Length: 144
Image (cartoon, rainbow, N blue to C red; front, side, top):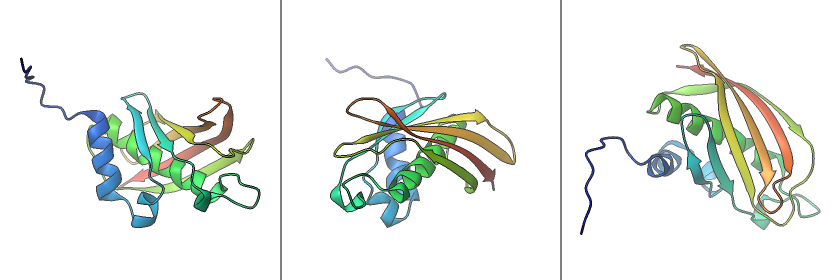
């Protein structure tokens, strides 16, 4: 028995996958970010561990984590809007609290204050293995 639905809204995980593959530069796609949860209040992406993203000492480098944070916020804003709209990062303030070594990272992005011209957000990055917070960031985006 096949169930059908009349819900015209796309599956939010599938929509996020499409945005990740269609909207971002190849080097961002190389991060292999994968949506875990997509809702109007928060988006969670998984950054798979990869040696190529590590600095000396085997920890995920700040550049990869900041790119993942920025990308997650674009997905969060788009999910809240129900569609992608062009936007650009105005600020991304990042605090690194502890390293993430030899494991995936979970990036949680939340829109704090949506706006017509500016949107503000907050991102937390935690180790997927122990859930400990490793990075906190705040963002501002100009809606184009």
